Length: 219
Image (tube, rainbow, N blue to C red):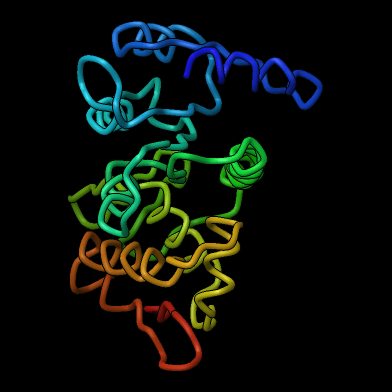
């Protein structure tokens, strides 16, 4: 696969993709923690530790926490995709895939990463602070780390409380491509976010049948 990625990214320099290709976990960690990296294409089946374990380590380290990650794998089930997203992947692509599909995911991920750095959530609700870029939400004396998708959902909810967001709107905003599993993945991310926020804040996230998700403004 190293040869494939080397050839693939060599044709994308005009789009601003400047890639470093590595084939093992120690080298990957050295590159990720030693150079400025915006996006990473991470294979689940890396030599040494798995890509999933590497991803969890990335999300726990301050230098690599905010890197956008596309997980690629030969696994192709709802459970595997949810597991990858829960580990902290921004997106997921099953093998075999077309080069056009990989490019579309990378373009979409780059656009979404650019939006994530906008100064969108101004101020805070009483008792809750949210750092979108770090994926960290703090309420009372407790802090909770969110996955990129959970952080994206909370970003939408806090900026537009009391507004009903259809599943299609949320999916297009956070994923940006067609998928037959879109509803299952969105619902899983919303359920996980509700659990992490706890009864007080998670309980404000509701699904209105036939209309969409809404975050009730506590004020």
